Length: 262
Image 1: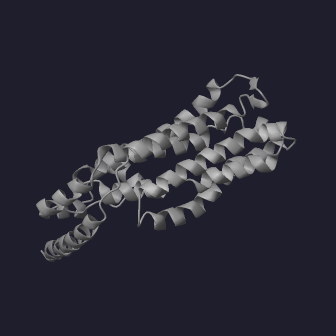
Image 2 (image 1 turned 45 degrees about the horizontal axis):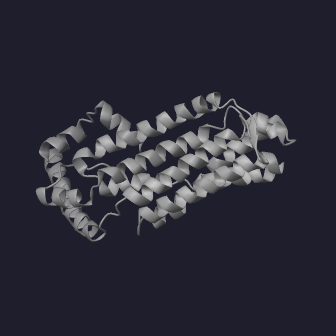
Image 3 (image 1 turned 90 degrees about the vertical axis):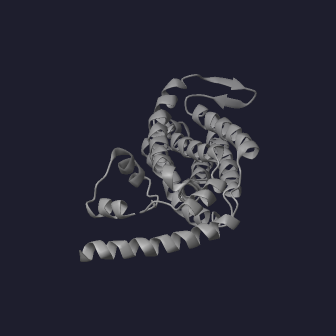
């Protein structure tokens, strides 16, 4: 604990901590006690953590996969090419509101918000893809707004902060940042590969609509995996973690006061 306090005072850092801080996830300032580690281990589930990281990755892919083709899509619907800025930005605007209710919802559950997020993102991508055949710019923007309202990044951060043991929380936070960066890179790259055009019945598949269909399928598969593999943490242990954390923080602050006095 003293070493941790000295480390904080001297502001030392490393690469994993640098990445972890970009995730805006609160880190433990002192080592966990044996009792707290045991309680945290009871809540930790590796597959559930991976599902949260995959959710982060897919969402970032979903955000950026339309960027190369959004202007052509807007023009094909009779709008100016500059309307693509509205199409792209509407998802980020809706994410502001989704962060509020997802943060509150994660106080009660992690599984239900992730299921809701997957369903809304599936519907949003279907609307985005169907806008071409309906010739409706409104459907296109509504689809992107639904995608933004399905953003569960607040839940992903909360899960890492609450349910991942302190000894690996920094690595999980770094994984969150890396998954986000990888999704940002893969989105436009995938869009560059979707250069086909064909029709099945009355549904058009083109470079403009395929990103929506691809992400709809991806979120549907993710939803199935989520329902099969996700393990809801035991909420009864969170009160114990909070009490132990409060006692540990009080002791840590006392150590800091002693070090500063000396």
